[in-house]
Each structure stands twice: as C-alpha cells, then as structure tokens.
Image 1 (tube, rainbow, N blue to C red):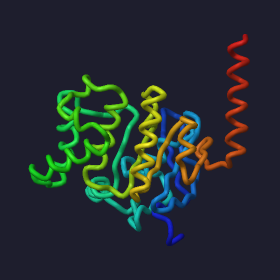
Image 2: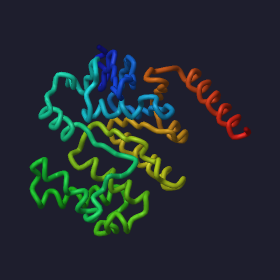
Image 3: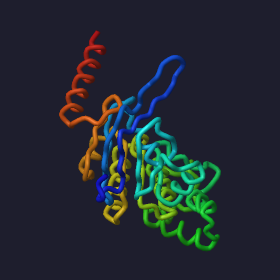
Length: 246
C-alpha cells in the first residue's frame, strides 16, 4: 500500500440482497486518497458513490475488500471500535442536514460533544467558535425551521467539526440548496480543506470540480475514466431527450 495515502481502498465490494436478486453496489474498487486532498466523487444515481462514502465513514460494512483510514483497518473493527473511529476521525455532512428540529443551532452543535465526554463549558465555547467560523454567530439561538437551507447546512458543517476530525465526508451537501447557497457551502468546504482537513464529497454538482484536487468517477460500482463517464452521461442525456420527444 502507498505510505502517502490517508485512505487506502483495495478490491472493495458491497452487495445488497433484494429479494431473490443481488445488487452489486460496488464491484471491486481500488483507490488511494491523499491526506489533505479535496476529493470529489461523481456518478449517476445507482453508481455506488454514496455506498462508498458510507463505507469510508464506518456507517456500513463492505461485503469484501479492505479500507484503511489513517492506518486503521475498518474491516477488522467491531461495532465499538467503529463508533470510536467515527467520533474521533470523521465528520459527516448530509444532503438532508439531519438537524434536530426541537434544538437551536447552538444546541445542535453542542449535542454530539456530550458523547465524547466534553464538559459543558468547553462544549459551549467550542460551539460558539464553530458557529462563528461558519458565519452563523448571530443565528445561534434559532431553530432549524427559522433558518434557510444554506444556514441549516452551515450548522450541519459546524456540528461535523465539533470533535476536530481530520476527515470530512459530505454526501450531496448542495443537493437541497439554491445556486447561491450551494456555492457558499462549496467555498466553506474548500476553506476547511485549506486548513488541512481531508475532504471527500459525493455530488452531482459540476461546480464542485473547480474546488477538487482529485476527481473520481463511478459507473455501475466501478471507477472509470473521465472520458468514459462523460460518454455515459452524454448517452443518458440523449436517451432522456428521445423519451421526452416521444
């Protein structure tokens, strides 16, 4: 394995059983992702990109293959070890924000720190700093329903940073946002990357390419070249146009 890689993936496979059918979400992936990189994973629905992200974050287990993150072998961990890994190493950002509606922005950010054994005064101090970092110091005591989509995603990013993780995993972070809000979230992720964090983003948003240090393209559970991906995307668009014309 490459010593320079922060994330090392070998022959990664994930198969889901749906009734009598087997769906091969990942069909044998080999990847190295460098520490401090901004990696963007693109692929159509069903390509396996979200599955790959969830496996990287220890939220699911592979059918076979190996994943090493910061020299830790995820496939060898039990559930308790995976919980510690997620708490110490990974910050998650989801398309649907996953904020607790009854809590304020400040409370949403402090809440995960309880499970890390961080004392109350330190939780409050850290939450205030993080909300200021994402530009929401003046909205700290507003609930999610009182915030725009872009503001809610910023709260989610602040929450992802509470335990100072070296790895940020983002699943379609701009998917539920308008154009302007989406772009501001991209710039915020880029700023976090420049601070030294490793960022891995799954997205359909082509604008994310301008922030990426590495692009990965997935089709049918396999890594493909940009040319193969573009050809498939073009074919899919042509098929859609024919269907709409009929």
